[in-house]
Each structure stands twice: as structure tokens, then as C-alpha cells.
Length: 557
Image 1: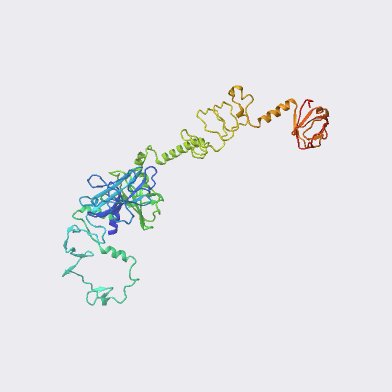
Image 2: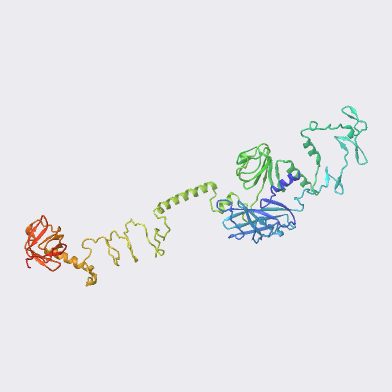
């Protein structure tokens, strides 16, 4: 019975927050658990610490103002109690050490909660009681039996039993005088059951009925308690809560209790003819106990349909089955903030319209997908490198030292109005004017691209002409005047053979003056095209092989 009373009390008292615990007034060093979820999508927040931005935890005693808690960190979950101590447990649950003042006498409950920027803190309520429910034996003040005041001595009730099974009995010396004269037709020898009357091992397993434990349990404590502490209404409430009478038990926070009609993975059909309007049970705590499972499961009601008595909840860990008893506890919004939001409150908090939350989230998801797709069609053309870095895009004011290492294949039709420090690679073509200097090579300049106006007066002097420019100019002049130069591949004192002399007509070189690098000159008298040999009449001081020569177009010697 004691366990059943505690179960009903822990299930929730009608208060501002879900019932978290039952604590004796004046207790010290007590901790509670708060849940913290994301304010946008409701997922558990796991990274909150005592000094997270916007954290503000509080407690409020019955009839008093909210008291702010000074948060402090804890070294570990096993660390001794510290007022305001705060540390993550797991999966969005956090240990909070409430100050001792929260549990002082003078109040019947204390609420706790808080806020964290961008999050929702789910607090609760601690019921403060005079009796200590954490001990093995719970004290009870029974003052009446059967509607009459009882007589007590040293904590023991004095009971006058005048009847047994409806028949009067005679009493003597505080003992029930009963005359049993026969047992199964056999007279008792002394009129009392003694050890001698029962044979050894006469009562074994076969003689004990299967329901004997139930019978013994029912016989242990059968009391017709019409009052508790002088209050007959309290006795009626206790009876209703213990025997599972269908209906509400307001002092225990029970909006309704009874036997469910059926259950699915996410619903529980409550007792028929339950007078609760559509959605009125939303946010309440539903405790379902399936006889097959042998334990209870608690869930928050997310939707309630009155016509079918159906409460929708988060998926049960195991779908309740067998005979399903349930308890529906009311959960009011928080008085201090952070917890107790129903579906409408959540929509309002995150700025959604009053439509179904799933519909709103689906609309937002579709909108985001459309916008992201539109942006992606443009950003797909951007390089993967970081803006301003090598290979990245240009951003005004950030690319002073940027080097573009990849090819620019797109034609630039606009103007570059700033200065370009240098162009180290080849430039395919420049169709406009280059106002600065080009220090690299230019592949080609369009015909007429360099005009007299492009070259400054006296721009080309001796310093601007390379050392081999004279040779080039001389070669060009010689070509114009018909002057030939070369080197004899072989020869004698009267001949020079040079494969470079490819004239086809023998008369093309006859009577022309041929001068050599050693200063000797001779007049060509014969040229043989087939052997590329020039013959002269004068005899040279040495053979002409490997000697360079110049052939002039005149016959002067």
C-alpha cells in the first residue's frame, strides 16, 4: 500500500509545473533535474554550462516571488552538493543543486525553472510535506474506525470486536471467547486448537490454496478509515485513489483515472464517456500501466479527440497491453518561464501561424529548398578556393597580394580602371590601348599597330640597338645590293667550293670580285653550278678552304 500511495503522489499534484519529487520540509542538500531543449526544433541541448550566454535559473516557493539562482560549476556528477551547482548529465538532462532555502518550512511546494538564450528550460515542482516519505515506515494518524473515534494506547488501537461473521461473541479478559465444539464432525478435546491437534506436516503446498497470499494480504490491514487527521473528505479521496475509481482525484493532480479501452504504439483510448473536450488534455501527463508488462510508462499528451476518447502520445517504449489502467495528470504552464508550453505556445514562441506545426515546418522546408536551389545555380559558377586566396574570386579591398594561378578563359568586356602590378604570363591579345609598360614578351602586334606616334623622338639610340643589329642590317643591305657572303667548304690557291653558292647560271658570278678574310681578293673567271666552285686567275698566297669571303657585284679588283 505504501508503494502505491507514493506512485500516485509522484505522478503529479495539480500545480504549475510537472511534479518532480516529494521532499520533507526543512531538507538540505537536495538536487533536481532540469531538461533543456532547442527552442526551434525541440532537440535536447547537450552543451550548456553554468555560464552559458543568457542562462538564468530560479526557484519559487508557494506564495513567494521568484528567487534567482547563482549558477556554479561542478567538477563531476559525484561532487558534493553546492548551492547553484549545475552540470550536464546526458541527453539534455542537467543536475541543479537547489539552495536549502528552497525547502524550508512554511510552504507546501517549490517550483524551479529558468531560461537560456535560444533554448527552452523544462523545470518542475517539488512537493514539500511534513512526513518523511523516504523512510521504510510511513506514519499515519488514524483517529476513527467505522465512523467512531478510536481509543489508542502507546500507538496501538483498542478495538472491541462484538461480532464474528455476523454472530455475537462473548469476550473474557480481552480475549475472544469462541466455542468450537467440532471440526469436520470430530469434537475437540479441549475446545481450543493446539499443536497436538495438527499433525506433523499436515499443512503443505497442496493444502495451501493458490490465492492464499491474496487472502493473507487482504487480511493484514482491513480498516474502515472514515477520516484522516479528522478529515473525512481526505479519507474518501484516499480511497478513490487506491481502488482506481474512475474519475478525477484533484488533490493528487489526477484529472482522470480508470481502465483504458485499448492502445496502439502512439495512442491510448481512455475510458468511454470521458467528459474532456478536444485538445483539453494536450500537454497533460498520461501514466499507462499494462498488466502484461507489469510496469507503467509516462508520456505527454500531444493531441486528444473527445469523440473517440483517444489520447495521442510519443511512441511507447512497449505498447501497453492486457488490462491497462491509466492516470491522467494536469500540467499547467510555468509561473516563472521556460517550461509548460503547449503546441500553440511553441508555435507562438517560434513565430509560426496557428496551423498544424507539421504543415508549417513542411512549408518552411519547401521554401528553403527552393531558395537554396536558386542560390546554387549561381554559386556553382564560383571556384572552390577561398575568396581572395590563390584561385579564388576577387573581392574589392582584399586582393592586393593575390596571384591568379589558373587560366582566365572568359573574355573581359569591361575596363580595368586600377593599376596592374605585373603580368608574368603571356597575354593572348590586347585590342585596346596599353597605357603602362609591358615588361614581358608580346606575341604579335596587329598590322599598323605601332605607328610613328607610338615611338617617342630619339627613343631608338645606340643603347637601344643590340650588338648584332649591325650584322642584321649589313645582311639586309647586302641582300638588297647583291653582295654575297659565306665560307669556303674547301678549295685551293685558285678555287673556293661552297655548297651555299646555289646559283644555277654560271654567268651569275663570272667577273665578280671575291675578297677573303685574310685580305686577298681575286676576280672570278669561272663558276661551276654543279660543284658550287668559283675559279679565279690570280694565285692566292694559301689555299682558300675555311676562309670567309664576300662577293661584290662589281668587277673592281
